[in-house]
Amino acid sequence: MNIKLMLMTTAIVAGTTGMAQAETLRWARAGDALTLDPHAQNEGPTSALAHQIMEPLLIRDMTGQIVPALATEWAPSPDDPNVWKFKLREGVTFHDGAEFDSEDVVFSFNRAMTPDSDYKELLASVKEVRADGKYGFEIVTDGPNPIMPSNLTNLFIMDKGWAEANNAVKVQDYEGGEDTHAARNANGTGPYVLVSREPDAKTVLKMNENYWGMGEFPMQVSEIIYTPIQNKATRVAALLSGQVDFIQDVPVQDLARVAGADGLQVITAPQNRVIFFGMNQGDDDLKSDDVDGANPFADVRVRQAVNMAINRDAIRTVVMRDQSIPAGVVMPPFVHGWTAELDAVPANDIDKAKSLMAEAGYGDGFSIRLDCPNDRYINDEAICQATVGMLAQIGVNVQLDAKPKAQHFPLINTLETDFYMLGWGVPTYDSEYIFNFLVHSKGEKYGSWNGTRFSNEELDASIQALASETDLEKRDNMIAEIWKVVQEEVLYIPIHHQVLNWGMSDKVGTVVDPGDAAKFKYFTMK
Image (cartoon, rainbow, N blue to C red; front, side, top):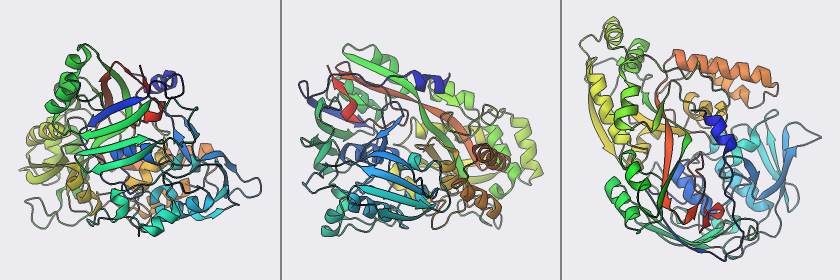
């Protein structure tokens, strides 16, 4: 499957602009947004909801191309290679009528660089942000940053005055269980206004009649009713019965049923996301295993054995019903730095895996807990259940603990899990994003999702150097060298590249966004 070719040849939704056909769209998916605070959680469904209400300076359209949003122009400064200059859109207002200008952008970027922000890695090379007049904005980086615009497509802009008035200047400490006004309310510049919010139950949005993009986008959805439905059968039944118009995650076992139903359609595309397992390889001892005074995952031979024991083809055919692409690296093919060689899938070799376990001193195996979400990725719990049986073949006795993503993700962020599932999309389409979040040592500005405890000072320095390397050939070589270390260390256990299956009424017109973010201003209603 040629993912890059499919992306390039996918056309953006065409449709007549205006509201002549505007109507309600009832939207469902397995899990809800974790919060409305735009900087607290860098998580797919959370960003997808935020994109309806708020906007970044630049955005990726439904084909993955970067287009203007709250900024209309951007370029490196002709006077200083360390500065990116942006011209901001004039005449834009927030939903409460407040005027949008550079003060809001400076505030939002500074907020996104604070410790509780889940977006700080995207701005790790930033030294200063500053206004350049009312409708100008500048980012000063520590050395020239050639890909800075790619880092900004999910960095949402808040109204400074609204944040100050509602005690929302500080980013919500999501992992710490904090509840804030910004976690439950929103005031953006986006195409839809928040009407009501019941977390994990229902969120209602209405069209922003004062949206700057009226006449520029179809804007044929006048109201959005968003209902998280975790149970697969219930979610499909809601679509089949007409209770909802659009579900983002048709279960693979129901694809033919939905596609064959009158008035419904399924559209499919590869996703810019890899599903994988992470292991605590840095601690001297593990809390969730039965080995006293040692860490089995600290031995690369054990990690290699786990990698070999997982039968990705079986997961693809049995669990995923052929709706996945086995992976050998935690990098989607969309991403700069990907090669077929890196993505070569390791052979499923149980005998070799057993031999490695014995060499490492674990010939009799060990027990370990696997933490897994049950409402985030396609068949996430089922993948984990299949993995339990596969690892048993090499003596690893796995106790599966599956729970909703709202409880699962903090285990990774707070280093409370030794063995876990995670999926990673790459909105920048560049390897640096993966390195900053997943490979760099966990610290104040980097590594917020690195639950492996892996730390390598030399590698950290190379990762940080990517942000200011303008010699693209040299930068590509640096990326390749970092991936070489990641693969040799078996830092993660890749499972597969996800495939998206969107199910909807045939009155809904759209293409599948490779980032799985349905941006409803682009949708048409027949």
